[in-house]
Length: 399
View 1 (cartoon, rainbow, N blue to C red):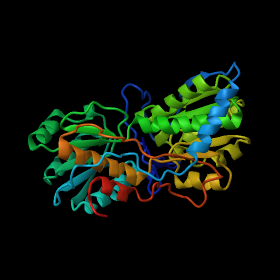
View 2 (spheres, rainbow, N blue to C red):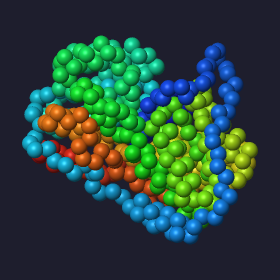
View 3 (cartoon, rainbow, N blue to C red):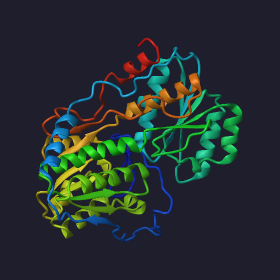
View 4 (tube, rainbow, N blue to C red):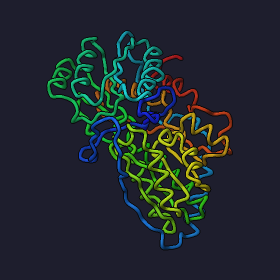
């Protein structure tokens, strides 16, 4: 799936780069509370597994083959099921976005908005504070007042976040809400979807795991930097750990769980460096979303650490530049930010046509493994570049 936000050392969000990975908050995983201005945040330890066996040569060969395949640029969207007829014109869609996550904004403006306009729909957007349940309710009520055909929430909120009163109002108005950037959810006729789920996270995680197996020849020591409160990102860590444990018995894996207060305080890079320094056998570090690792090279240099291969999911412009200059090893490109808006609209249009409340067709997004050998001049990964035209063809709309 896709979470793209960047925090500076002061902990504030900085716009502009990004990815689409989402951050569905899980319950019972965040144990720290921050009070006061300056807080010393302890390291949150994760699980670890030591590679005591030898990785079979067949597994290494399979990983190498997968890496070669995964580095090829996708040219087609994954959805292949057409609508039976073009959607009616003159409808409207409202896109709701988490105001803490710049990539949410761009899913709306670079994905939902152009898709809506291309089919002759009106578009508007509303932003809300994800830390305040009342803010989401207010945004949903404001959206419903616009008499939309559909509301798309790209903020990644689980179904339990929505109030019964608000859902009842949407049900009475027969307006569906598309859940986007949610790891998993049980859809209803009011909350449909989700689009951009844990499946995308698992695909990217497998690509990165194969890269480690291939490049280390089945002996890699890996640190996975996770933020468990974001369930879609947590799926990256869990999937990669599972793949390495099953396919690479000669590898060792350690997970560093970072809390939300640590994220807000800009502690991801410092805690990562501290962990790497304490575990010299770890020569690969994987960030569950690439922007979490922005600044890692400066941290490694300051600590005198060398020979660390940096990897990440959902490459941002900083990650792309670092691959190009050779300071980082590999990132996955995708899901592309606009694509997440397109598939959200696709889900909405299928619901309008057939009443479908969940995925009809393939709702995973194209993803590519990026290394120095194929990065070229790419800064923001966006493949296939004609994705909207391909969706319009499925929607029977002339582009």
